Every structure is written in structure tokens, then in C-alpha cells.
Length: 276
Image (cartoon, rainbow, N blue to C red; front, top):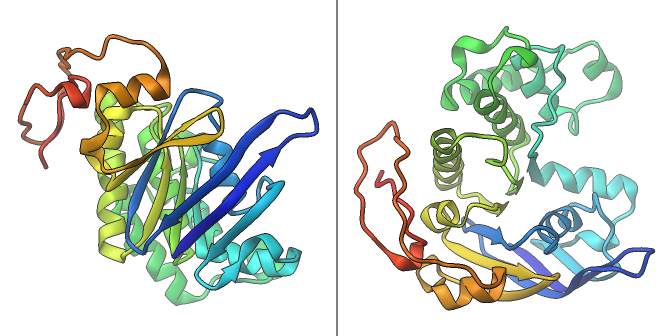
């Protein structure tokens, strides 16, 4: 599905953000990228859709080699990659519905988008998506009147309106409280399962990654140092990725909107796992 081959990124300063990254992601797999700040997680996601141009290597989405596309071809290819941003990237003065419909801009011409003339089936799909993410009663509300979790749900619906093959998700919970963070991660996971979507999620919260991802990739200084199932991410590997730290169990007292089971587990860093 997505194939990243010998990918490297070196900036003009000479600093290397990524070094020889090789990742294969099959259809429907949810992958979490973890690692300390500056490890290259955001750069990797942005190299996939070429918001950042890689220095070396190749990226394939299916049979399409993204790294060789010209501007027009890349614009078309980006329709197949839904991007969900840390800062939401909404237009505050527009309504929730208008922000979701902006996800269709890659398919429509300038004047139709400028005049906000969208096909009726696209509008109907936007309604369905807003209902699915729990915002059906917020359709006409301005984006700047929403909470952080609501804004992230708008971003998710907008990305899905593109009908993508893969989601590229950059720190979706960075600005959210613990309860809302779990809700957003659960929603992304459920939507990927419903639509057989692959996803790469750059996330700082290790226990959320372990709870909601099929696979975890650990980056350190731009290199892959771990690639495996969440259960394999033990304290030794966490120390390799992040450095020395006390990974002993601790009590997490956050509440959730679902029934939870607390199971002490040093591998999961002592975090409480919501069983949903």
C-alpha cells in the first residue's frame, strides 16, 4: 500500500532529519510513530505527501511513485492522502460544514470552490461524515466557536471527504486533554477499520500509541530503532528510544466515557488502558 524506501532528508544547514528510512504499510494498518521531539516524526509524514521534499529515497502509494511526480500529478495524488493536522488547519470564519467541504477542493475547479458550489452527493457525504464524528448539531457553527476536540473532529471529517487511501495524522492529541485524546484516537481507529484505511499517526503519548495502533515505529535522531507490535515495546526499548527514565507503573486517574479495566503493566508504562 505505502512503501517508503531508503528515505532521507537533509536540510540546507547540513542537519539530517531522516536517515535511510524503510517502511512498508499494508492496507488497513494503523501505525504510530513515536520518539522524542526532533526525532523526525513530522518530517517523515510530510515527506510522504511532499509538503517536505525528501533529499534521497522513494515513496510509493500503490503503484504511484510520489517522489517523481510533477506539480500537477502531485496535486492529483494528494487526493488519495488525507492529512489531519496538529493545529487543525481550519478557517475560523467559516462554518463547520464549509470547512469539511474544503476537503473536496482537490476535485473541483477554482470558481466552483470560490462560489461554494459543490455536487449534491458531496454535500450529502459531508452531512454523513459530520454525523459519524458526532458533530451533526454543529453544522452551521463557526469553527472558532468549537473546542479543541470538536475542531479535530472537523479535521477528520474533512480528510475523509477526500475519500483517501491513507491518513497522515500529525500529533492529533497534542493540544487535547487526556479524555478527549482517547476519544479522538478511538475515532480514528474506528474510521480506519470501517473504511479499510491505512494510517500513520505521529504521536507523543506512548500509551495511546500502544492502545490504538496495530504497529509502532520508534524514531531516534531520524533513524528507525524499533518497528513492531505494541506488546513488544518493553522498558529496554523505551529507554533506547527516549533515554534513561523510570518506566515503573504509575497510577493514571483520568476518567473516560466508557467502562475501563485497570491492569498494571510495566510494558505499557503503568498507563490505564481503556477497554472499549
